Image (cartoon, rainbow, N blue to C red; front, side):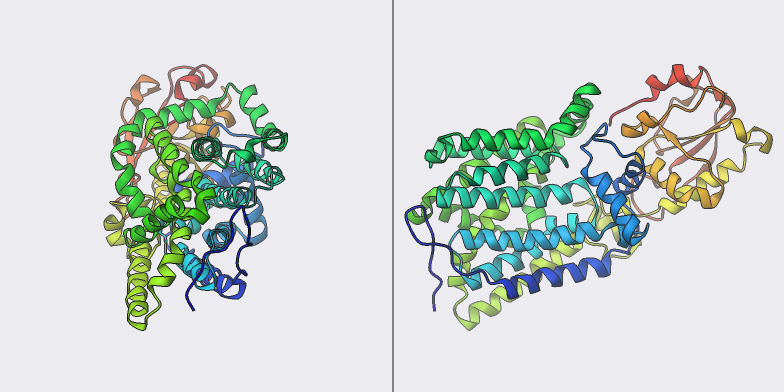
Length: 499
């Protein structure tokens, strides 16, 4: 039987939810992510979150509190290992699969369309990448997908009480990352441009916005109290990577979602725009255009706009289900799905030997950032051994960036290293060392770092880290200096940096 569209503002509800099949797809994805989670090692951001979780706060220099606190909770329950840390990320990716299937249902997709939506989502490179790592983007994707699903329900039914759910979800999303404001602006612009504008009437939209602000208030208070450092960080990202992000916006949209899925999400966007019964969903078409323009204008990361393309993919699964009615076409579709899964796994998951990681790094450099951290700690330990025993009580271990500092904090104690300091991001707020630590300084920095003599005295290279992979820390410098040129309390503002 052919798939038929269901549901609109004028009548008819969505078809039944294909829960057993969709949950089975989500469980399969969770099993694959769990099996692969121990490979390679911690990502630099994960190492940072492990330390940040030990400094609980309503905010941090570069982010709201959710991900660091989730990291602390997960390791408390499952242990301090990559697989223990990544349990919430695995569950979040599985939940995204279910939510996109529910979006397909809202857009009129029956059982086959919902299962296709779940399967295509599970094969999406971006979903695999953030499901494998415990990073802010993991929960951003989950939150944005949940917001999108609630917005679809609001637009389809016209029931303005859904504004309360939208407000709650947006507020929770803001406790993980402030980028949800871009999604709110994009969808609001889409509604204003294409309708249905009736959902903006009354006091429910105001109540939803107030609820979002109330939930996000603790982090907003923290940011205001500390001078809005996240704006500084965002400006640094735009200044350093903005031009590259703009150039790569379209290519990476295709690569991260999967080039094999392009016909599906294009069909979905056209369907939402053209199909009379789905006229209410047009804000998701116009909204993606607004969101893409905002991301490009601000120099943001290309993946910021991907969650709305998952909604387009969900919309495209009904015409895809119709296309796959014959056995021959189903065989073709299965082959394409396998290719999409293989392509995405190559980009997003630790399936390659470490020696071949450079091939995946060309598209997703986060792969390489999971390799070599124990080797970095080994190099630092070799450098620390050069510090005279009599001077170690006054010596300081200083890392250039938060990944290095996080690695030294995790792997250093077993190697006899002291707690590290760093001026990078939130680490700057956990310093400086006391001025009484006026002895030697062991610096760990990336291979292209220079200018140590400007702030430290009598510096010499004593070791190099060899990670065995093509990544930012391969060849990292370990430099031993006899001391600082100023007391730490005076020097610290010069060492603080946001990017």
